[in-house]
Length: 447
Image 1 (cartoon, rainbow, N blue to C red):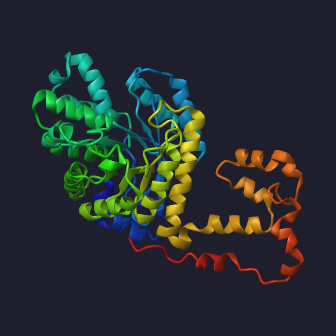
Image 2: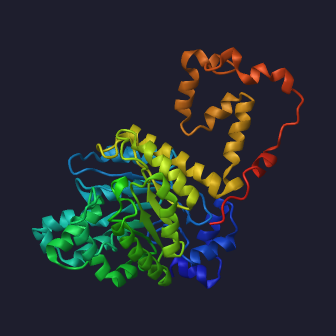
Image 3: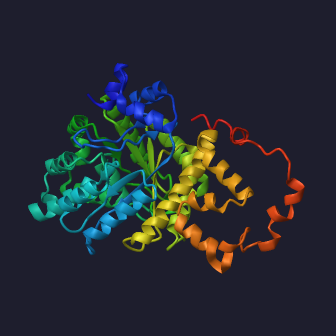
């Protein structure tokens, strides 16, 4: 029985109980949301020792880190180190986007290295790459081959998988002839589209949607409905192609939930600030509230080398509006394969954005770290501040530069620090308690 069906049965579900305890939410409320498809807990039932992470309505916003080889650069050890680093700095989920080397080998190595964290893939990459090698051309790849690769990933213990089922042959044909800046920027989406344009056939995932649902139901893994037509430029945001695919994705998501299969919908992409909230609200409304998994979104196309910042700005807005899972971007986005330091920078930027969104979305439930950090700053408690920074080593390095480690204040204000100047006047005042400070954040939004 799948997790959704277990939740509907009304019995005690240990997986849901564990997530409810970790998130500090009511078990019965969470069980209802899982039953309705508004929360997913990605875990393949064939994988032992899974680390349970809840994604969806009323839960903290999660952050995903992509790793994986490139077709022009293959270093398995580098990708393993990225996984280790991502887990150390708080990644909630991981995805392998490998396109170079032995794809089965790297996937299995990275799953093993992930320590049970929810692990995702995009099977279309392997279906295309190995399909061309095996059958001789794109046009010769049979539709069943795409499903064979999906099942191979499921057997390996993959917990969630991007399935580009909603880019129809009609949408693909219109996209490549459109006046978009970039007709299709999704790698998996472009592969499925090219296959349809070469063969003249409908999307193999869509044509065989019933079989896709059966596979994911058997392994109780999560379908992550891919956005093949996401905008790759802010000028293309929320156009008819993106919305056309979203409409079908929402329909497929509702069908998945009805059949007891856990599902998410993936979102853009490049979206200007004024459209971020609209995008999230539209996806949630059309799908009945299934979890929404967004790439950033990037709010400007001009941030080469700093796209992790452009993405974090959009991610904070998206999280506050109800997005549930943020896919990080690194400073290497649009430029090249990221190194370890760039993975770390991208992850921390996304973690900050997700938490900033949660302060709005969840209110006082998310605010305890902020309250504690604020109190530590007011008391010049450097030990607490450094220990609880997103990157303690970097924070300590900055604190120590210019001789700052020896000061009671910091080197920015030195002897003119406001807390030193006003110390004798503020002594004896009644300081607000942690509980009083938390009250100032309110209940959060009703989503």
